[in-house]
Image (cartoon, rainbow, N blue to C red; front, side, top):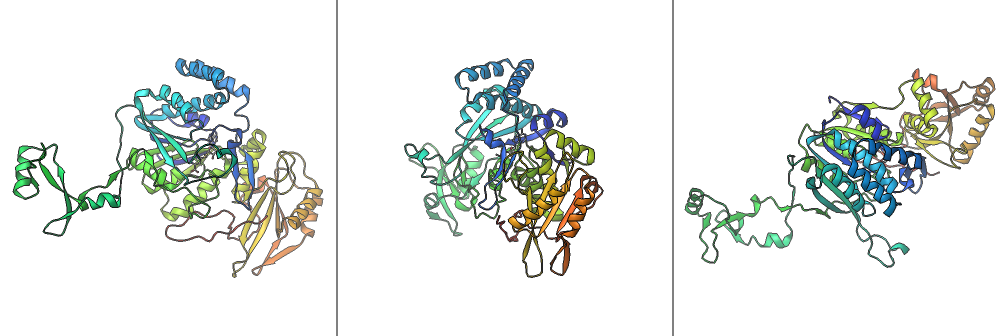
Length: 510
Ligand SMILES: C[S@@+](CC[C@H](N)C(=O)[O-])C[C@H]1O[C@@H](n2cnc3c(N)ncnc32)[C@H](O)[C@@H]1O
C-alpha cells in the first residue's frame, strides 16, 4: 500500500474489494454494539439532533440468512456451528454475531501473520464476541481482555438501582500468530512506590536495594567493585542499587483506568457520540505496531485511530459506512495537521454525476448526507424518515469582522421533478429556523418559475457582501465546480483542536 486511504462503505465489501491478504500490521475496530439504533449516526449534542440511518438493512433476516449461508460455504465449520447454537440459545445476540463474524474473518484475512487485532466492545457482547474471535484467531492467540474504565462513577438511573453501575469497555486483543510486535508502556510511579527509593547516593540520586536475580559472575564483580551491588546475608540473591531516575515506572497492565473519557467540555470532542480518546488509540498503536506500519480501522467513526496513527508516523486505512464520519475525518485531520498531513485518498464517495446518482438510487439518505457534508454542513432530521419535511441541513458561518454568525438552511432534492412550491417552503424554513440564507440542492433541473421565485427573494447583506437569499444548485453544476455564494468561514463543525491552538466552538441553536 502506498497511500493512506479513507473509504466510504461497509467494511465487509471494502475489505473484500480493496485490501489484499496479509497487508496490514494492526487492526483496531470499535463497531456499534448490538442494537439497530447503534447503526444510526446520532449527534446527541444538546443543540443538534442529527440522525441518519447508515446501515439500514444489516439486521434484516434475509441478510443474516445470507451471511450464515456464506459462512457455511466459507468452510468455517466451527464458526457456523457456534452461530447456529447462538441462534437457539442467544437469539438476541445471534444476528449481531453473524454480521460481526463475517467482518472479523475479513479483518483476520488482511492482517499480516505478524499482525495484531483489537476489538473494542463492552460487556453486553464481549463474552459472545470472544468465542467468535477464539475460533477465527485461535484460542492460543488470545492475548488480553483489556478493561478500560471509561467514566467515573456514572449513573443514578433506574437501570442501576439494584446493580453496580457499568463504567467499563472491553478490548479483546489477539495476535495472528505467536510472532508479533509488542512494546510495553510504563506510567509514572505512585507516591508510595517513590517513597521506597529511600536512600541517596553520593551524587544525590535516590535509590533502593533490589534483588539481582540474573547476573554473570563478571558483572557482579564489576558492580561490587563500583559499589553498585553487594551480598545480602538475608537473601540468596545479591542486591544492586536501583535508581529512581533510571527506572521505567510501573508497567501498564490490562486494567486501564488512567485514560479519560471524552466529556462534553473536552477540547478533543467533535460531537461524534462514540468518539474514543486519542490517548487510548495511541496506547494501542504504540504497543502493537512500529513506525511505518499500517493501521486499519474498519469502523473508524470520526477517525480517532487514524489521527493517532498519523501522529505516530504509521500509515493508515479508515473505513466507515457514514458520509458524515468521512467528512468529519477529513476536516479533523486537516485541522489537526494542516500542511504536515500525509497525503491520503478518499474512496467510495461519489466523484461524478453518475456515481452520485447511483448513490441516490441505492441509499437516498446516504446521498443526502454525502451532498450536505460536501458543503461541511450538518444534516438534520426533522419529521419522519422519508417524509422530507423541514430542513435537511444547517450551516453556520462567520458573517463579518465582529465575528457575528449567519445561518444557511440546505434542502436536498434527489429524484423526481422539482416544483416552485419547494422554494416557497424553503423560504418558510428560513423563517422558522432563523436562517438568513437558503440553498436548494437538486439532481433535476430547476423550473423557470422556481428560478423566478428564488430571484425574487432578493439578497441578504452581511459584512459588506450581498448574498442571494435563495440559491439553487444542480448536481451537474456541483460537479462542474459551481458553488453557492456563502461566507468563506464555515464554522458548522466543531473543529478538531489545532496543535497548540484553541479553536472557538460555536453552538448551533435550532
Ligand atoms: C462506535 S463508532 C466508532 C467510533 C470511533 N472509534 C471513533 O473514535 O470515532 C462505530 C462506527 O461504525 C460505523 N459502521 C457501522 N457499520 C459499519 C460497517 N458495516 N462498515 C463500516 N462502518 C460501519 C458507524 O457509521 C460508526 O461510525
